[in-house]
Image (cartoon, rainbow, N blue to C red; front, side, top):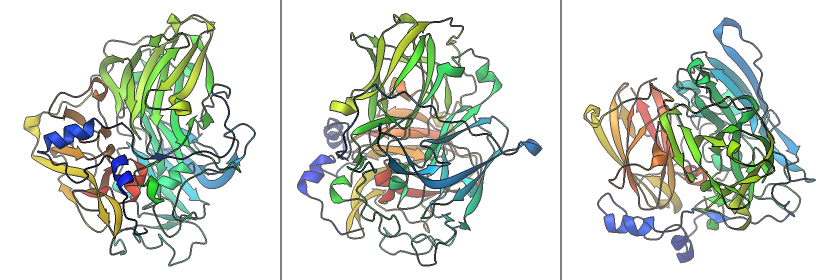
Length: 533
């Protein structure tokens, strides 16, 4: 990464007073928490952009297994370059899973294993991580467990797990590389929910996701299907992202190395995160979707690199619809929670029901982002097109299998700070004052141990734990927000905020990660190793 000094303007833009926040720094934390809920700078597209609510909402295709024998569903996905029409009349080059953006959706059944064979026909190494998956370490997508292109030559970045952004680049002795293909196995022994898969290659996760390497993975079971929630065409997966476009229609991203081969990182003004000025839903700009006057289940993912949303559903005459949350990152809540707005950090998911049955046919309902400005304030629209019978319901009891971890069960309390710092002579993002190093074990936990982690942030950091879900105990020493209900795998920390989470490290032994899911922060050092023994 180039040795850029951090300008005064940039420091102020990412929260100021960096490095001063501590677990006892209440005054500083409070001051930072009042700063705007935005991290990063916005790119400006150079191509004419369409008006909102003209493009129909696409739905990602559901992938069919190539085999279901032996009690295992087997899939094959080819990672390849393609062009697609994201903006009307404009062709855009993409890196894709199976030629689509988002990639194809995998529909899995709880308790039935899934194996996905990924074939890498892209010009760089890749890694696949199933975000939110309760996955053995060998299939979790560790950043140095690379799938190399067929003609990748020794000495190129990534060939031996070389980490380019630490002070002493070295081979990761535990890296497991494969050439051209790799099988990822997911036991699916977890609660039904919507997960997502994306590239996780060390140093280059952010630009790879930006170019299109993301898709949905939904787990279902009989108990959830018996609840009577909206289903079929009234269940809509919504992967929300932001992007920017060059004059020729190509994706605009401020990489230091446009080939994504050697030098990681972005241009200085985007060190805090890259924001686009076009909001895409399932790959379409500000789309519109016709709906029945009935309840609809929206399974929402913020798949953006750095952009935060605060979603609201509003009719054209200003009426705000209730958002009934039924699920979080890791599945159904115990009981529904109704919100007026929903804040979403990168990688967070919400399972929400909106009742369009209370809306007059012909009415338009806009899904808006209260944190956006101008075009980025709009997300998508629903056009209530027809009256229809609605047999769905939202029961008062959704789930009875949520964990009941208590403070008294915790065998350890750990403190972690997420803050900016210096790394390799330049700007970095650090956990506990250290940049990521694959050969260093940062945290060791015993399989089955229950722990409380206390987290503190300088600016916005969506913190993600691999392998496990967790419950949010407190924010700033107080009770969590209503939107924090249920089992999470990503917590959105605001500037200067502290939070406590509790989890049990069950499942599998091996090497995992925890990291910031602002993808630019992640690429610039904000990851740490978690060893389950």
